[in-house]
Amino acid sequence: MIYNNLILNKNIFNQLQNHIKTSSIPNAFLFYGNKGSGKIAHAIEFAATLLCDNPIGTTACSNCISCKKIKKNLNENIEFIMPLPKNKSINKNDSPIKALIDKDIENIKSNLNNKLLNPYHEIKVAGAKTILINSIREIKKNINLSNINNKWKIYIIIESDKMCFPKQEAANAMLKILEEPKEKHLFILITSNISSIINTIKSRCLKLYFKQMNQHEIENYLLNNTQIDSEKSKLISKITNKDLSLAMKLSNSYEDIICNLEKCINIIYNNDFEKWIKFINKLSRKKNDLIMILDLLEIFYSDIIIYKNTNNDNLVKFYIFKKIINIFLETYNNVNWQSCIEKINNAKKNITNNSNLEICLISLIIELNKTFNNTKFLDYQSIYE
Image (cartoon, rainbow, N blue to C red; front, side):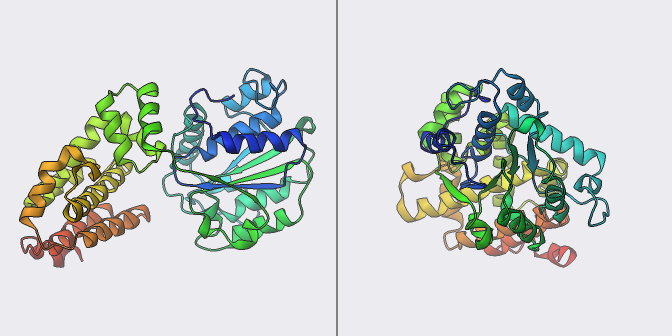
């Protein structure tokens, strides 16, 4: 095995092993399911098994030359395709690498190296919104070349739904490749958003669904693979919506994230515009942390809705914020809390699409305070609209 810390989906891995045993490996798989369920790591383990020089039954040995190369992201028979930023203009026949600046290339290498060490590392490349058509053209250009050592050539396509966004050029090019399969060329498409993949591609893949992990699995994984204690493991496993990638990310910076989330909640409650400006300026260079705080803020407002409707403490995920949940409900008893969640979600989308970070966040707090029927921030509205 390449990983010693992967929660193996035994049902799926047995299916993959059976394809190897019976020599019935299809041209393309589609691994789909919720974020943080280990889809990419399972694809890597399957690829390692197919390429392993000394497989143990139908599992990679982890110590042969091929497996060692995989661990260092140096195996020539595995190619990772993913959404890329386009920071340079390129021609249609150029390699996708030409669209990248040096910083992008280093970021991608770092993400892949971290992924090969940690099966639940979330690959995030700044400015990457779509899989470039050039990435698929590069596959088509190289697919007729002889495979190295006559082994499988394996393409792991991360966030494959982004071949279909914002245009379907890359998806249509991939479809042509899948319609004319080449021997010993395997495509493993990975997605957490299968509904966005065009039906003609889905129909040409063997689909394997990765179910969400349960809270107990995530809690135990954190206890066994991180330095955080049982109380923090319990909280993280409750608030991360069964997403182990998010749970691992949160465990790495738990104190800072929770502290900043609490500040964020208090600033919103107290309508303190000046503190909000200082808060977002302090975190402006940590875009991913800000997105995570907004993710958790959504959960906080969901907890308010749940507690308001059920009065059941056990259903509240952020039980450490139970006191402030009560304060919010007492102070703002007629608020449309679902509207707050929608406003936060819109802010996240705008930030992800590289809209001005400061304007997005100032607009968010103004919109939230409109929902609370507060007028204190309305003087700033004309400035930032």
